[in-house]
Length: 176
Image (cartoon, rainbow, N blue to C red; front, side, top):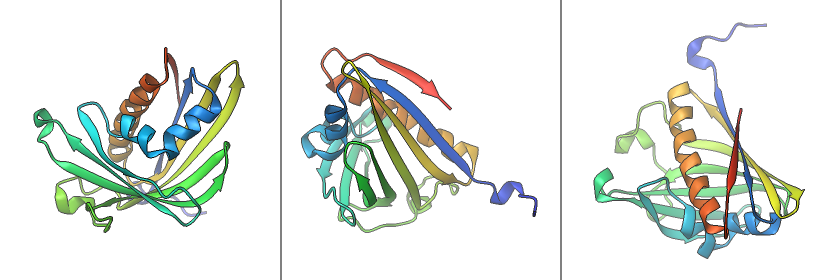
């Protein structure tokens, strides 16, 4: 078996969050434009576009705008769905794009060179009963710990905003 070098080692992000909300509501937060627009983007960003085409083979286009404090820039991504098991799991490829959904290399707009052009994501939902839902998001294949950790920070902040849309939401973090 060949030994992996630092340059070809991949780093996956696994983030589990427990929401005080029913499974159906947490699922809808990912697929309904009105709900996505309430939480997409880390702290200091607002969602400016949530055009959802949630079906296998479909591609959603989401956009966020940074506050002036963070430079006021706009950033867009597509989520191209590969597999959907309703209320259980879905898999998609996330890509950086322009406002029209045309993919590009994130390094072209100032992101660190190790931020990948696309990342495979798998979201798994588990009904814990009593109106509680566990969500595990796995992002695969970051070329560096730095790129993975940058994504982790943004995802955690997005999920904090998601939790806030559920009435009386309290969350518990579990990190892997």
